[in-house]
Image (cartoon, rainbow, N blue to C red; front, side, top):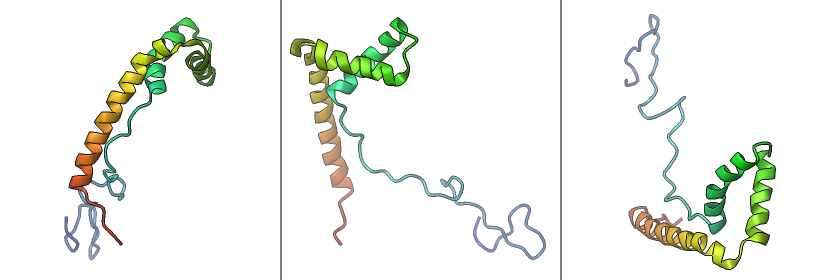
Length: 112
């Protein structure tokens, strides 16, 4: 609705302006700030291991679970055991760099 038109519920002599489409609570939609960042090897390991630990030790709080998994990653896993997650992280980094390059072409930075 355009300013000047009466909206439903507007009293005599009053004008209400409806919110623009695509806005929530009068706020603009969040701007697209580019592709999601690359995920680290640790994050891939945590995402895989967390449900398992949760099932094995349901009494652990989130903070304790994260510390437990972090200790495994840091002290108990060998480099060979970490390698699949490092490979996934490298692949995701390539994805990010490719998407970022495309996004930068479509959205050139304005110089001040």
